[in-house]
Length: 144
Length: 144
Image (cartoon, rainbow over all chains, first blue to last red; front, top):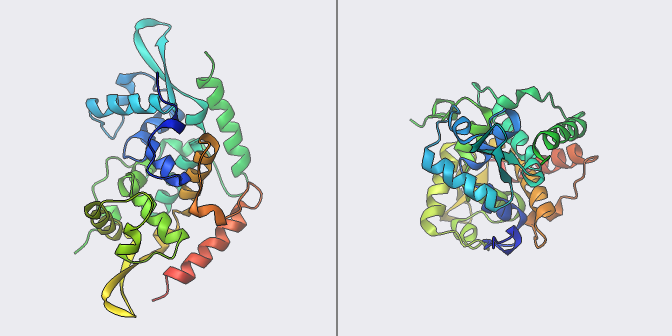
């Protein structure tokens, strides 16, 4: 039986540390970014991103993201031999973290682009834009 | 001469990916958390946190955080042989990322505590609370 996140070994009870136990590496949030902001759902599609993730790292990260309940696997209805990956609600809830990373990098690096550019977010409309986008993600990812 | 962050090798030009090039590991954000929310400034103090970071990892992370301009070193005025670590403005700007990681973990883990609990933040007062706390951090860290 899989351990729930709460039963996993955490380095400390600090909330920030617990979050980094789940997604504190160079790749996990990029996989979640692709599931949030692109139509990539299969292993091959996720491997085709600009960052060129190595196949063994992608496999390991997908496994750990599933173990911590951030994504779920499903059979492709159009091709039973193909597995698709979807965000869970817990994964979708990381949207604000990804948005804040993006805003930080845009402020401090001159040459960036981002697949998250579809979200026109500022301090005033922040809550509404995030709520609407989370709702959209839930409709795309959280229906069986 | 040190390379500026913009001249470093990035996996792609995506803003999210660039941010993770700088702080995408299990430890960097915990060091920044301690500098933001505690009075820890020396190597020994930073090593004493609950997560028990290994000394070689702490040394490597402090070096890379300095190289990417997120922290700066200074001599302890009370003890010339001791080095203290301070946040730069670029490091302070990661406050919203840490706050969103904290909120996410608090929602999805039952047993958390956090040294960031001093910030009573909700969707309405978010901007004001973050602005005030950043100002406080600048006064603590960014004076020579």
